Image 1 (cartoon, one colour):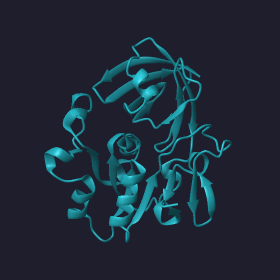
Image 2: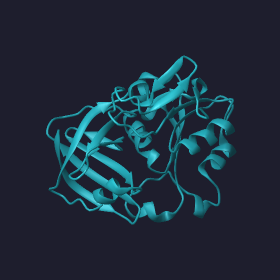
Image 3: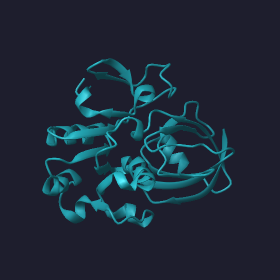
Length: 233
């Protein structure tokens, strides 16, 4: 679907991009869309930070060739969006629990979306970034800056988490691995990130080993109970 960039804010390493789609895409927190821009053959997956009506907002880290080109987009430019894809948080988690949300860098985006839609299921939020750069474009009372606080967000959570708490987490694979190890006795649902080719399980490009066999992160996830997946595979 052709979509229109309506607002874009950038720093050296981050983008916040608002997009208007041709039709309303009802995207639940945790789901993602495949985005492509002019000059690229294959799309990449992004989870919205917010979605209302035809408007979606994305928080994007500038980490490669495509995101470097996305940083150059301007209001009025067109991009291609396909989705929504994946299974949302709300269809996987125990709805009788409240959760500590832990975001790692731009993995914070789907968790901010979750808090906006399901505030009653949230106990506490921490969105971790290494440097204060993100504050130039993102306003949120729960931003955690490693270099300001002198610790990682996982170390901060360790200081207040109670034995009956549960966690929703999204971030890099190494970040999620560290959380799974540190909070091994807790219920944790993670939104896994991976390179995806098709986004619908056809290309078999995003496998993850689970207790019930090999699953595709795009089709069967991206949300998984971390006790069921083997991240060291």
